[in-house]
Image (cartoon, rainbow, N blue to C red):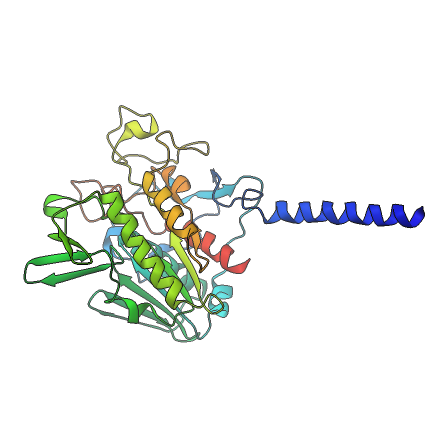
Amino acid sequence: MWVHLIVTFSIISLLYLSHVFRDNEDENYCNLFQGSWVFDASYPMYNSTICPFIEKEFNCLKNGRSDHLYLKYRWQPQGCQLPGFDGRDFLQKYKGKSILFAGDSLTRDQYMSLACLLYTSVPGTNYNMTRVGLVSTLKFLDYGVTLILDRNAFLVDLVQENIGVVLKLDSVAKSANLWSNHDLLAFNTWHWWNYRGAQQPWKYIQIGNRLLKDMDRMVAFETALDTWAMWVDTNVDPAKTLVFFLGVSPSHYKGSEWNQTEVKNCAGQTEPLPGSTYPAGLPPALAVQQKVLSKMSVPVKLLDVTTLSQLRVDAHPSFYGVSQTAPDCTHWCIAGLPDIWNQLMYNLISN
């Protein structure tokens, strides 16, 4: 009888522990991407005025932004704490290794933020930075850490041909060599997929032998992501390389999206939106990203920053980017929101 009771209790205990561990492993148990913004006087994480890598369109302080409240907010996930970013630890983890970012100007935002987070953690460290065409390479010489930026708005090939510029949805041949043999890959694309008219950088879309003047842009986006995913699944060894994909980074050109009908855009916004949800909801492109990533054999970590970024109506350059007449409500100030993206990435790397 006692043996039977002990066995029964052991089975129940194992089932209970299994349930607890499953709950802890469930992404909803402590979802780093769900939460709200809280004021923190200790922020920002670094002094951006001593970072030499920030390009003009992101350098809000240097461009004269006088309200600094946007720098004083910390991301607080629901039900857990987000550990801080440790630049020295990051450099030690990736000593002698290489990290590649590929994507549009939002990827540039993230790349420069990471460069500043690392540089300011070891002030005065030796570095070398070069740019050839659309590829920038930053080397932290004392650590042997290499950061590469591939300015690649669509990820798939954009090719100049006799008929004009062609967007090839089923090819990444131009990028394959550059993307290979890195220890961390961070990708992003979405921002350019709905551009039309003079802003549209291509004349034709090509899929296989089909040449199109245009097509459903969401379908084109998904087709391109499938091509990218196939390259990752075929060429990346997950035992050697971590892969991240940046979720949709929102723009703030319509105050009605956050229930401020009297507000035209992000200009003049100095504080994040309260709460943890965005009135306009999530963009459909995020669902496409999630769908493609869910089908992949190589695990790709989605930096699901969409909602937390939607709440940051205050964090754009506005008139303190490249233009003093047209507010930039697409990109983000550095220091600022992209530092949180990298803090989240750092925690996903560390765990």
